[in-house]
Image (cartoon, helix red, strand yellow):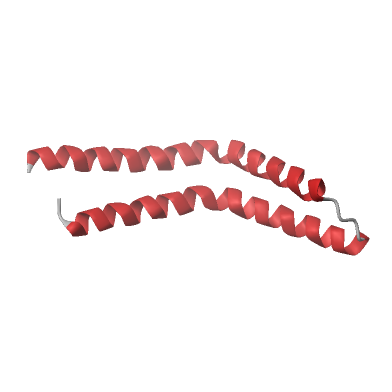
Length: 90
């Protein structure tokens, strides 16, 4: 396996990781920002007020996007297996 192939597989793995995790991170960021604005406006400083809604938002986002996440991870895994199979034929 050439170094270029290893770098390409690593790049593809990082890209898959970013595209799969981005929706959950964005949901947590948006909910955290909204709660922070609410806390600043009302001067309520309660840590659990930010923690629990973020967890719920990330969980809901994960459940909604689970079929898409699984299809992306399955496509990446198939690509890796195809490359492994191609190594034996070469």
